[in-house]
Length: 338
Image (tube, rainbow, N blue to C red; front, top):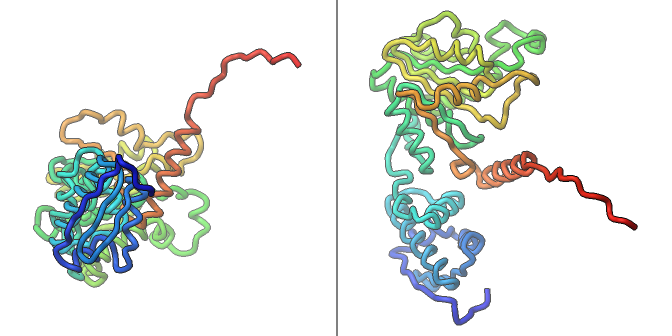
């Protein structure tokens, strides 16, 4: 980037080499992110970082670096996705909220890893679960919808706030295709429930999971198993809710008993229902909007916490959908004469 008389240069000192490496990486591979996102250039001289570019963008870069430095000093890991997210918050005038990211520990896995919110959207989601009896979380893959809900359910079980965890999801192909799979019904639906097993195993370990399963303190079952039941003192999670029908969603929501909490997660852009079938999740979001003690949290590509490429993929699909849904200009135009 060429220097002009309008460019400004700011300098910032890093307290330790670990702080520098924590933000920019061992080979300074994260420095180009600031050029990509803000159009500024960063150079390193020892522990000093030199920022050059448009005055407003330089200020944003310095503000972001100062906040990220505080996060690194707390012992947190800063990756490329988090840097881009912090820059975005600073550009929106929310730099003061960057420090909220990953501040509170939601749960600790059986291996001792701390589970924390990584975006403000995730924090809003977790707060909604704490404050409401029923919470809907709608957003793309990789936003932590299911994982965070399971983490909170495990903590509630450990704290004896509930007596059991119930995880369920619809088996979309529960008709003819399912019948051709080998094994009994439990084995047939197992592939649909595998993501829930994986999250539970990571949170509590396989052995603890098996013990709780045998005691009836954990239940993982297809949505059809919920019919006719009243679920008391339970933390109930419905995953992939976009693939429920209207009837299934109403059936599920009316299973709630005393002392229970419900979390419903889904992605309305990935509906696998047959053509002509309306998603129960889409309908529920319309019907239940504004009802007391029911929260609806919308997560976006900015809340994706997987590999940064996943965030880019989600964003590309969102843009494609917007173009496809844009109204076309259908006004009559007479042909020009040749």
